[in-house]
Image 1: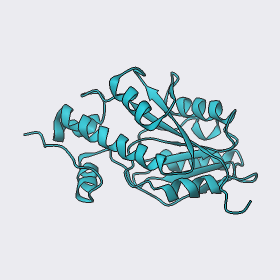
Image 2 (image 1 turned 90 degrees about the horizontal axis):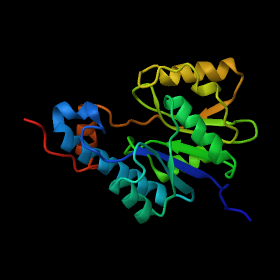
Image 3 (image 1 turned 135 degrees about the vertical axis):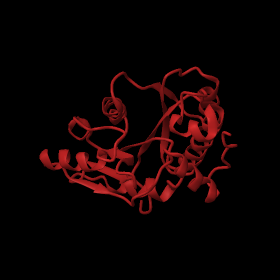
Length: 214
């Protein structure tokens, strides 16, 4: 039948909403509770967007999978919960992608920090994956990426990456080239890491924000 999109799955990397343990770079401006409220809003926005897509989805949690916030998300959005494995971000993403690839033709993985991700971004990323293009990324303005997807996951793009730095996407491209792997990139987006990013999201009406620390 025409018009049907290829099946794909979205894994959402998240952690429970615990003040002082999420969005820590926002704490000097918004205090621990304010940063946690901003984080909760970002998660909610991500989950709402994922639900509007044609994909199936799952929560991949760092930390307490039984925390009230995680259970609430899983119940309201009908999402299965999995624990992220031990290791650095690359090891955790690889484990997630490989695990899900056993049951899904295409797998996208996103965090919860990008309030401007849209359903069209998900659909475009999934459509970019093919027999000749096993990887797709949505670069971030800060030099990282906000989405990674694959239909044939392997360790190469995740090895020896300086995570949480402005070098992530450049190093990932180099790793892909070194391993003769094709990849696609969707539009460059921005995410919320610093106080200026939070202010940008609030100004754009993407989140309601939180009172600033005085």
